[in-house]
Length: 184
Image 1 (tube, helix red, strand yellow):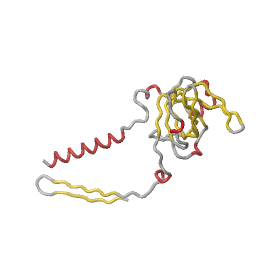
Image 2: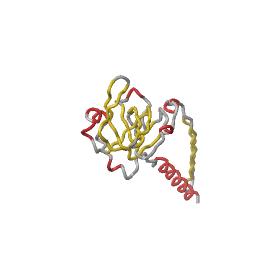
Image 3: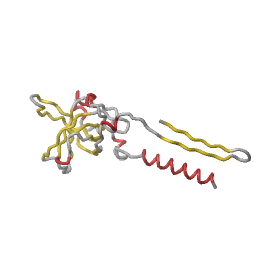
Image 4: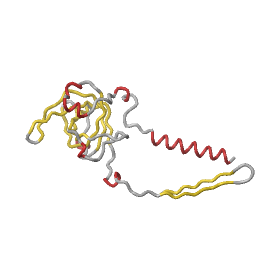
């Protein structure tokens, strides 16, 4: 009976880990369409030559405004980590880009500083004024937009962790075993 309950516990633990790790940022239907070989710096260098390509870019919201064709969001590009989340280091940015959400999205709900991961189709670039100069923005038409919850800088810093593990076992015939561990 103990063997069965131990196996059941492990199956539940593995299921929980699998469930937690299976959260998808990019919808499964869009994943095969994404051209991962297209890099942001290449698009910045020649934005119109990538028109129609589906890409995944991430960034931090700088501002948003309503247009006739939808809501335009200006983002500071940030590289994505393994979980498709924009990194926190703004020094790693390779420029700015615009995304167009064609359905209504109230600009007041898009808070400056919010991190986003966007799956979008590259459109024609757009020239707008950035302070006193003209800036050529790559433009993405949103296929999927993922907003990341705010996290403080403290969340990104390593800090001490404490854990306790307990184990035990039985043997056939003579003997048995047990264990206890503490980790920091």
